[in-house]
Image (cartoon, rainbow, N blue to C red; front, side, top):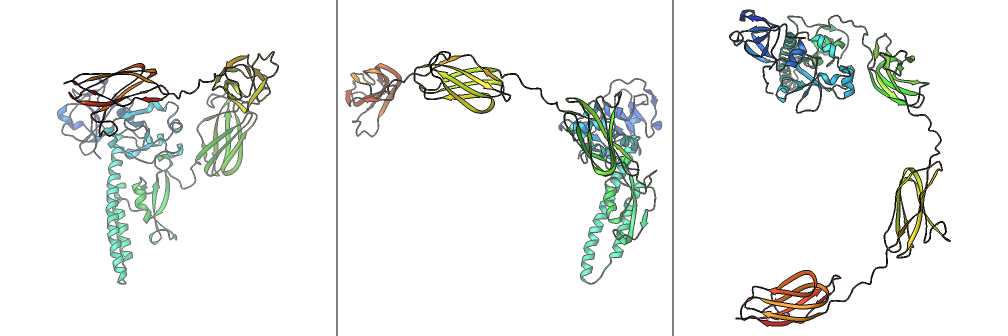
Length: 589
C-alpha cells in the first residue's frame, strides 16, 4: 500500500509563536515553516509528520495558538515519517470514491458506521457536520476494520481518551507493527518445528516439551515491545485448556470500545491472536475483576397500536426492564411516564398503556444486571396508530366517465372513483327516463378503476347510459345520463381486381415508355426481358407504389435495335392484382 504524503494548505495563521532553532524542535512541537503554510508535527527519532489538511490538525488541537514558526533550513534535516492521522473518535471520514462513512479508531483503523441511526447514536443528531471527505490518496494511511453494528461496539469518547497525543498514536502504530512482525516470525518457526516433530514421531522420538518451551520463549520475546522488560504474567491453574496448565494475563480491549477493556486470562495458544488484535500484556490499569460492565441493549422493536404500544429488546445478560416515555423529547419533557419489570431476563417486553391515537412518543429503554450495572438506549420514537374511523356516510365521487364503441355490437364503459366501490351500467336505446326497457351490466368486487363491456348491441345505434358505484358502507353515487353510438356495418370486402386497358408503348433507342389505364386506383409495375417471360432466365422490373388510374413507366438502360418482351401489373388497395398479356416492342437503332 503506497503512503500518500501531502503538507496541509492552511489559511494564514494568527497567534503563531516566534521562530525556533532546530535545537528547540522537540517531540510534540507543531511547526509552521517560515514563508509557507505547511504544518508538521515533530515526532521521535528526528522525524516530522505532515498534517494532510486543516481538519486533521483541528481534530487534535482547538486552535493554532500552540504552533511555532521555524526556518526552512532548521526543518529540512528532519525526515518525513508519514502523515498525521485524524484523532481517534474525534471525527467521521468518507473516502471520495466510497459512499460509506467511517469512524476513526486507534492504530489507524477506520470502521464503517452502517446506518444513519447508528451515526446519530454515536455522534449526535448533527453527526453529518463531523464528516470530512478524504481524498483517495490518503486512504492508504488507514486500515479498514470490522463494521460497527451497534452503539455498544464503539465509544468515541473512549477512543479519544486512550490516544491523548499524536505521539501516543505513533508509538502505538510502531509497537503494533513490530509485535505483529515478531509474532509472524514465531509462527513461521512454530510451523517449521511442527514439521520436524512429525518426522521424529514416525521414528518413536518426541521433543514436544522442548518445542513448547521454545515457542513460549519466542512469544515472550516477540511481545516485549508492549512493555519495557516486563516478565510474562502467568496464571498457574488446574485447567487443561492451555499448555502445561499455564495462562497469560492480558488486558482485552474490544475493537473500537477502549473504555470497555477487561482483564482476562488466556492460554498460550490464544496469546498471538489477542496481541495482534490490539490486546495488551498484563492486567488493565485501574481494572477490577468484578462485574462492572453494563448489559448490551440491542434489537429494539416497537409495535404501536391506537392506545398502547409494545416495546421489545434484548440484552446480552439477564437484566431488568424499564421504558421511560413522553410526548416530548425526554431531555426537555415537563413530565414523563415509565413502565418497569424487575425480573432478570435477556428477552424484554413492555406494554405502554393509555396512549393517545395518532401521537408521536419519545422513549428510551433501560436494563440493569444483577450487579446494578445499568445500560440505557438512545432516545427513539414511535407513533401510535389512528383510532377507529368514523362512520362513512359519503358516497364515492365518479370521474373520467367515457364510453367507446369497440365494434358494431360491443362498447366499453370506463370511469374512476375516489374510493373502492362497485360498478354498474344501465343502458337503453331511448332516454332512460322514458325507455320502456333497459339493460344492465356490472363488475365484481370493489375498486377505483372501473371498466364494463357491453355486448349484443345493434350497429349504427345511439345508446343512452348512466353508471352507479357504491362503497363498502353502501353509499351510492350515480352519474348523469350520457350517450354513445355503435360503429356502422363496414362495406363489403373488395375482391375484384382492377381492369387494365389502353396499353401503349413508345420505344426509343435505350428507353421505352409504357402506359395504360385501370378502372380503379392501383399500383404500376412493368416486367421485361429480351426473351419471352415464360422462359427467360432473367428479367427486369420497374415499379411505382402510388395508387392511380393513369399509369406510365419508363424502362431504362435498354439495348438499341433489340426486341423486348413485357407485361404490366396493377394491384388495388385491397391487394387484388391484374396482369396484362405479354407484349413486345423493338428499340430504335
